[in-house]
Amino acid sequence: MPEDGVTLPEGAKVTVIADDDEEAFEVSPEEERELLEAIAGVERGDTVSAADLFERLSRKENPR
Image 1 (cartoon, helix red, strand yellow):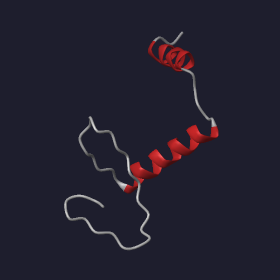
Image 2 (cartoon, rainbow, N blue to C red; image 1 turned 135 degrees about the vertical axis):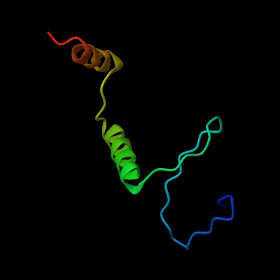
Image 3 (cartoon, helix red, strand yellow; image 1 turned 180 degrees about the vertical axis):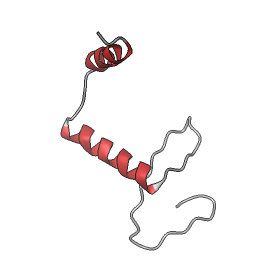
Image 4 (tube, rainbow, N blue to C red; image 1 turned 90 degrees about the horizontal axis):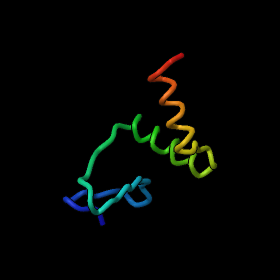
């Protein structure tokens, strides 16, 4: 059951992101859409290795 007296209608869709060590945060509908798209991408395997990410970032900081 949600905290702080929040009530939801039966069958309501909600997104829950929980981490016991972090404070709660709110996102706009656009930010929620972006998060859900990113999660779906990861589930599809659309990922980049850390090495590739650092290489891309390095090229942006030091264009040739």
